[in-house]
Length: 50
Image 1 (cartoon, rainbow, N blue to C red):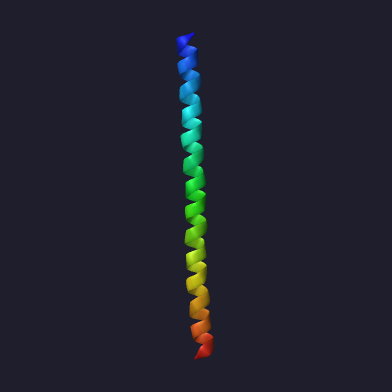
Image 2: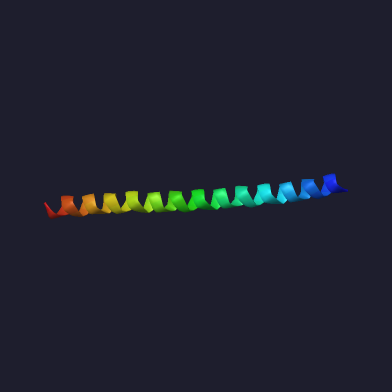
């Protein structure tokens, strides 16, 4: 019984850690993509002003 309980607890904790890692990775990629997009827009504006 205790082995089954330990297995369930470890599985849930692994899924929680993995899910939070995936969510933080997605947010980081979106933030990184937005910063790259802003740099490209700024460069386009500078080019059009010249």
